[in-house]
Image (cartoon, rainbow, N blue to C red; front, side, top):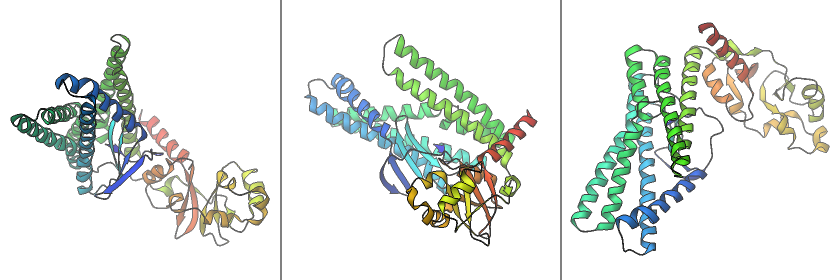
Length: 383
């Protein structure tokens, strides 16, 4: 589970929309799916079920692998449905190399919601573990050895998933549970995140070192998975604490508090060749707001937009005409909206400035640098 504020998220292969959530397969998932299938088909099942032809092992391996990843998907869906019940939308769930990722639109507002969301996934995995264990026992009683072994393996892996995820280090589920408990007791989210993220970083280094030992001492390629997962968890733990700092500092701060008022703007009737000469070549920015004569915001003209128009047509295409073809919804923000939302929008790729509008008219510009500078100053003063 992750905060969905991260920009430039992977697109992946769209596989459907359920419960209002879009589901995707990341390209890296196909690699891990092939590795898991291969390990089951050429190692695990031939050892446990000797004497079968190889196509049978391949079928069992593929079936078990797909059910395993379905289990991970259901685990993330458990988080997501609870999140939606708490009023926090979940736009997408992605299956990738390290497992699943439910991207929540924002962090919970209180410790109680955090605890509920964190426990949603493990509860699903525990239920799946019980279901597969029961199916394994039933298949064993009926002497369906292949089905019994597949179900038994799925029960074991779901149980291991619970144990791994409940380690009390952020961003793992156990870390989120511990963070919620500390947050509830102290009332300090930042402190709770600091403690659990440091535990998470320590655990990630353990995984990295264990993976390196497996790879270089015992020559086991499985060590690469530990290393990749370790670095992923370390990055998530560090960014989680940074987000907690940002959330605390930006609480109550509005866009109007950080914006630059009365910015330079390009008239919507100005031809592109003059816009380049008068603004892009003589100015200091690669993005400028475009407005009508009475100040109505039309859109943001970015330097890369100009590349889409042949140079010989620049004198005949106005700035307003070009930005009219682009959606301006994610390029503007209300003057009284939160600085935290502005920061979320500014994390999008190639977006360095946001137009600040009031009643449809341009009143200012806010940049990622403005917000980061504000956070940096407050952090220095606290430190």
